[in-house]
Image (cartoon, rainbow, N blue to C red; front, side, top):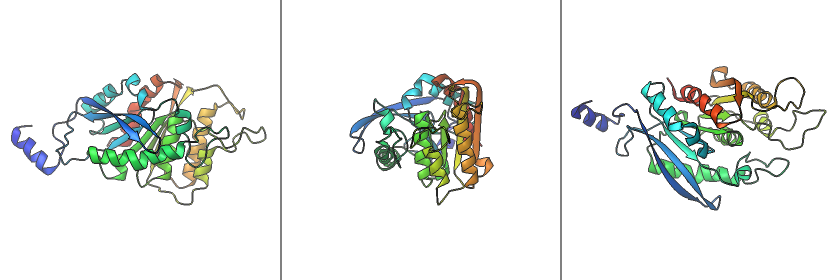
Length: 284
């Protein structure tokens, strides 16, 4: 791209040269809702410019501290260079020792009181972090360009927030989601009862049928099988939630399920699944 083309692209608001590399900006955000500083990583494509009028699709990740361990920047660079996805921004939200209290479902904590800070975490994301990111970075204003994802309990938190706020997030990504999260302990007569996320979907009065949902499970995510049907709970819980979404009218083409043979509940497996997620959400 010559100088004149670059100048015209800047004036017209188009991306300049194709994104090939990724840089990372890191900052601490002081959250009033959480009463603590939250470490944030922002992955920026090489063609990102704060002066350019172009707006970028983006994805938020809970458990952002796991992204460097899976070499996330390299995953993005490969997808950019192969033109599998457009230039996007990715925001990694680090957790701390209160993870099991801040993640969960905002409607209620689980039966052991875990997730009691999930309402505050939701406020942090929606009322504090998102306005700050929109002010500081060139995020696309289109809902379909906004995704929220997470790993394990972070995946439950991501889909809980996205499901409750389809006006903000057009897609959710759940890697080995802790969809067993429940309001009461398991009862032998009905071992699949009382799963909070399933209940939230089943009882929803309004559904945005344009929302998209991506799920991943590994066949070695765990060994528990509470209903003794020969399928591990992680897969059972995920497939049950997918059926609930479909019953609410979410079309089949707006749901993606990736089951990884031999996949484990660990960062390595989630890194292997990451390209599938990014291509499904942001690819052409």
